[in-house]
Image 1: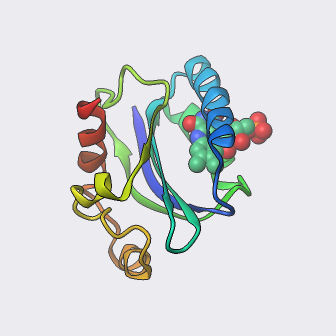
Image 2: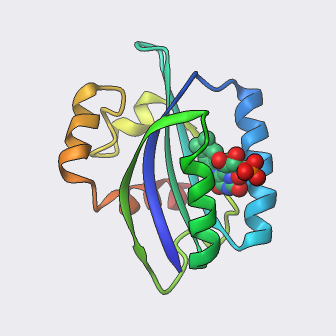
Image 3: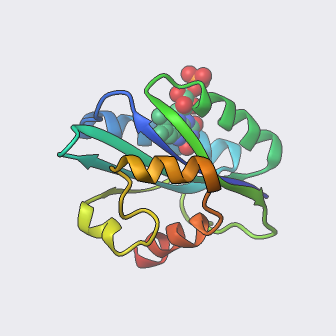
Length: 144
Ligand SMILES: Cc1cc2nc3c(=O)[nH]c(=O)nc-3n(C[C@H](O)[C@H](O)[C@H](O)COP(=O)(O)O)c2cc1C
């Protein structure tokens, strides 16, 4: 099972309808292709910007194909991989794509993601990555 965890910035903030549409399509396609994972979206009032954090996992060929589609999707940019590798067992086995529209307070409890709407967050990522990213996301999974 291959996995990738990344963060990105929405080209324009997503409306609830756009998020619902993205999720509906992703879930049905992921179910067909054996992909599971979790997607977090956070809108920042201060900057009028939207941010994504997503973990995807599945068979290598399907995951690589999905990654090519996500990487080339013009609805977001500044895509930074936090963590990738292989795991024997799935970490989000029950979710074709779990979703949470997170509030600033939710991320405040998650070290590393607290300041996703600050320039310093993005600068630090480029220099060091974030190997513990998956554990942080699992907190959202276990909590739901
Ligand atoms: C933040 C974000 C997360 C996405 N997650 C998924 C996903 O989990 N599964 C999926 O099939 N598409 C996902 N997509 C959509 C893909 O980028 C792509 O639009 C979709 O798979 C259809 O691709 P196609 O038009 O080339 O067939 C995501 C897009 C964005 C912006």
